[in-house]
Image (cartoon, rainbow over the protein chains, first blue to last red):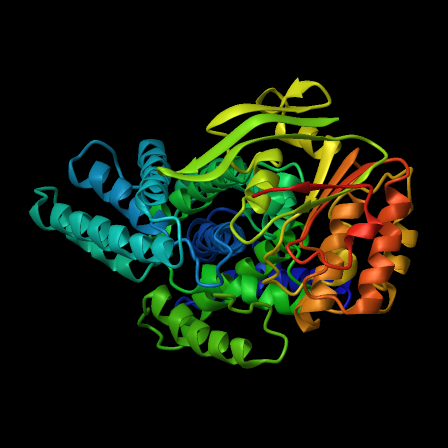
Length: 327
Length: 200
């Protein structure tokens, strides 16, 4: 299918899902959505603009960030398994968030919280980068080990924290958009935008980079510099996302595989569509989370895993799977 | 001119390349030969900047290699590594467009025509045979605009007809550029080259 049609399709889907996210919820709107535009008093207007709108914006932003981060991560590690969670970024961002909240240094959703998440995400990725043996699966295995360590440290910090309500943070293990408000969206949006710009810049080098370190160098690209910039881009995408909604499984892993099947493996082309499809996916997942067991809300990460994992297996079994193992 | 003088390389305390000297000038087609483990690929990696020499000097067009920015090195020399990592399903056409082509010696069309890559332009690189992948790799290297071309074992997966065609193409390129071809099996090839550098 032509790329422009795919963009159009995923954009239309985005608009539909966004409107549905505003329309559907536990409270049934008495007023049609269109008449609520510009209003900010009354139950319906408050529900739509104060609760559902920031939540939908959050799903859009975080979904796009996760999709792009997955594409960059798989490219940079030349490995179809490399999602941000497997390479320490998610656990680093979680620890960065827990560390400032459980000690009372910053409030949830504050700028300091987001900056700490970005910093810890980058530090943990660099730690793995320097500790991992430069061969085979050394990188991924080191990533899994460091991630487990950081997650455990975060768990200990939650358990011993004297701050009331911190224990509720454990919902982050599955991710949730329930705590989002317009203030948090305003704080995380600029950071994620920086992440997008860096990702676009990095993606232009990733196609040549994919041919191997030596090959890239012979073609005028410094593979080490590409890796450093990619990790910084990933930290700006993942840090704010995790600080606001926790760790959401499978989106970062699944989206690039879908995009590659649709338009091929060129990273330059993948970034835009990964953002769109990531946003689509998370909006859809959040809609399901809020509606299928009404009035109960189930954790977002459960739905992304329940849908994402089987879809991923199906994708990998198709004839056009874009990866071969070469070890 | 690419010039190397007393170039040595150790991996750990193992001597891989023992003080070799030599040069490659424009307008010549040179064969770099030697038995397995004699350091042919190491020499190419040193010239490509993928390895740093333990001692000795290495200059590209009169300038120390380390003082030239990586993107500028790629404008002076282009190298086909022995094994390129093709693990994503790029179309051949996409791979050939990764670099802006700007050639004076031979056009991109001539290169892909001579290498017999035209018929597979819209194939996924993953569906191709080893020999075809090697031709694509060679095309990527030759399309990159540079003064010197260094090719590591470009014939290893080629049949006799392909070897003849590739050699004819290289001789054409060598009219204006400098070429060095690494090969360990040179019994019937040496007559096609201007001179031979032997590593031992």
